Length: 228
Image (cartoon, rainbow, N blue to C red; front, side, top):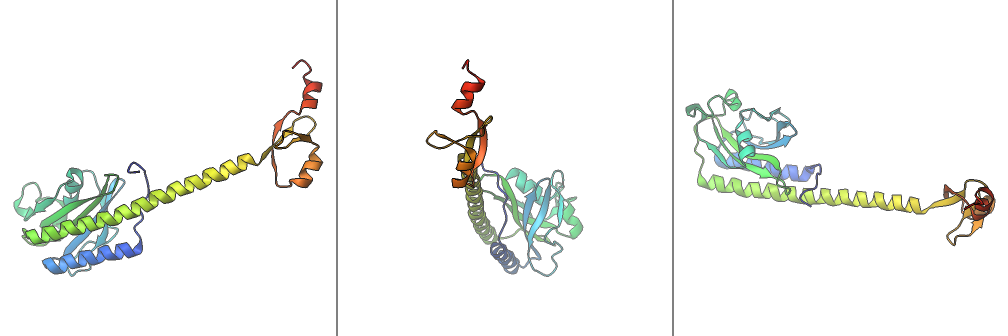
């Protein structure tokens, strides 16, 4: 099942619970930003953003993923935690795009789908130097697992729904094929399930819903192809 390709649609009630998680993170840590980022094709977008004072990020904001220089690009590509206490003092991060929004510290964790493909990140940012506490890291790891558990439920339901649809389509197609009735291409006689041939008008009176495929009845075979 984990190899299935399905569209992940997060229900409103789950998205609301994620929003509450981000708000709690900001309140506990005393920081302006907590985000859930999502990878969509060649772009990375803000999927959910804390409702906190001083937060410059809005749901739907997006950037090209490859080569963006974002903290979250590193987290998704490495599938590892990233802690940057002060980007301004770090040559690797001092020019990253979040600096323009005055976000100089970062802590983020990867979020993955049940098929092991990346969904995005859960992360927090601050506009000042911040090493973040071990307690906060543990809390974020628990929230990460909660989000991944929600995604697993969504993913499995989506796979089952897709498989059920395909099975229903197959059964309908099979039923349609079983309803096709052989008709003689020459005299238009109809063959029933017992392999008996009937004049078309007699058959249609009893089976008005039937569909037809062409064949040759035994009498016409003798007339048209006596050598067979």
